[in-house]
Amino acid sequence: MIMKTNILFSLLLLASTLSSSLARGVFQTLPSEDFNDHSNVNRTRHLLEGNESRSSTGTNDQRRVCVDLALGYMTNSELERAIKEFGQRCSNISRIYSIGKSVKGVPLWVIEISDKPGEEETEPAFKYIGNVHGDEPVGRELLIFLANWLCDNHLKDPLATLIVENVHLHLLPSMNPDGFSLRRRGNANNIDLNRDFPDQFFFANDDEDSRQPETRAIMKWLRDIQFTGSATLHGGALVANYPWDGTHDKRTYYAGCPDDDAFRFMASIYSHSHYNMSSSKEFLDGITNGAAWYPLYGGMQDWNYIHAGCFELTLEVSDNKWPIAAELPILWKYNKMSMLNLVASLVKTGVHGRIYSSGDGRPLPGFITVSGINYTVRAGRTFADYHRLLAPRDRYEVVATMPGYKSKNTSIWLDEGAMSLDFVLDPEVSVKGSILRNVYDCNCDSKSKLEFVEFLLGSHLEVFFVFIVILGFLCFLFQRRKKVKFSTTKQSTGAKRTVVV
Image 1: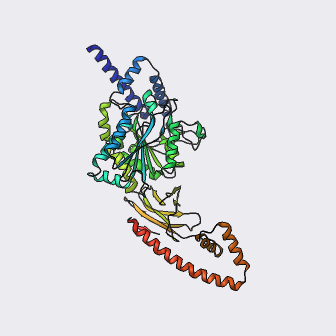
Image 2: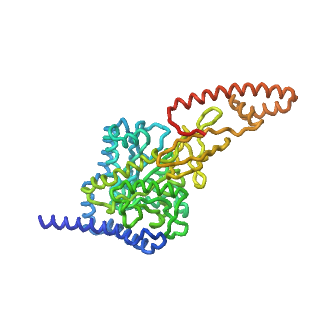
């Protein structure tokens, strides 16, 4: 019996050592000082992926080692029970919902944490996704740690209070529950979910019906909720990775997106808040551009930025893809402040505000651009709130636009803190346009408006002039009443705003 125990322990130790060595081996070929010479990176990566695929279909001894390594990790049913129990224990600040199901029908459960869960507010939304790859389960455990810590401390810890009261945080512990059960990277159809999204360079994934149900669930989720920031939790390295993930020619080199400065800033927040990520010898400052590490296509973080207006990082949070469960509390301790500070950065940095109409004060779901950065942020549909992530810098020129309105721009100086900036846009009007606009305010249909204008233009000039004078006077009274109403509406929000333009 003692001999069998020793043999089993040796196998566990060997498997853990090999996994850690393989993960580190990928990066020892990658000098952080040179982004252009990575000839060995892809070869090492292919060797690692080959070993992973063999382990999932290997001998009975290898499978037994995998099962033993999973001891102490929550099964899918245990994870579901933990999520629902959390929802009951912390019902005042949480909501539990599902965004869909896996290939095998396992619900993809999400925990939302907020002081007003399920309600739409003028607050940014952030999501964490774990277990994208089935054989990288650390993320699913860390997200349960995070949820419970916020529940226990949101009335005690200032950072927890800040997040609960100012952010809508959504946690998807497992995107790939089938892959976790099968102890392999891909889902039940053996598809790598981080290669299954539409790609800007190659169009293999453009048919939505051909994508995996887990992928479609994520895409629908982002159509339903406008996320400002996001991160996925992976394993096998220790680095914060940011877009672009791919290159147009499939070569390995630094490929920065339009918001490269903002992404580097976000990645640095995570890296420098981590126990030892920023001191990495493989990656300068503990961060890396995805394409400079190795190009990939169909990845989730590039799709988030391009199609969903969401700034997403890919976080490698453990050198070992599947460490023994006894190490999970230590990994939580190492990543805790990083995970919290990254979420808090949504409200502690960048520029935030709303867009209004000067005519009647109603919110305008317009667009925010920054001069010199080829990227547009859309304001929210209901409250016209926007949240523009930016790296601290001396000066930015921010522009607000809305079809049918005159654009406005202003210069801001963004230091380490956040800035609130509201825009009040004036409608574009002409003589004929102003008449149509006022007729529209009377709730007449389009045909009636046109017939009314044609009638006026066809009448005698004197009658038309008298009508214009009367209409102008009525318009003056109407606009005055609306401006009073607009002022009252703004004061009632109670929001503290630094600048209004």
